[in-house]
Amino acid sequence: MSAEAIAAIGAVEPSVALAAPQPAGSGALAAPGFGDWLAHEAAQVNASLALAENDVRRLASGQVQNLHEVMIHLEEAKLSFQLLAQVRNRVLEAYQEVMRMQV
Image (tube, rainbow, N blue to C red; front, side, top):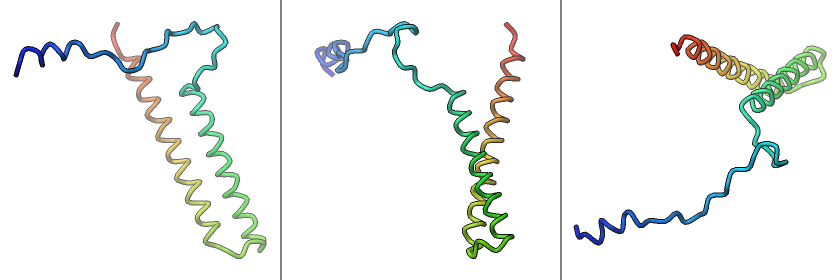
């Protein structure tokens, strides 16, 4: 390996210039955080559960003839609820782990 090749490694320049960070009160739109994402997902799970419950009611009253669609909606609601519960459990475990840390 030549000395020029080794020297060229240090001369690498970034191809994209980084923008200077703006203060929080500058009016720029902030990216949604984890809390926003969690609230959105909880609302989607709630909507999925409401749809599944409505499908079961319609099936029981004879308004729906396709049992397969009702079962698919029920399974989707069940899986989305289980996923949300697992996310909640992991967040609580992380919080408890942080609280156990010694400063």
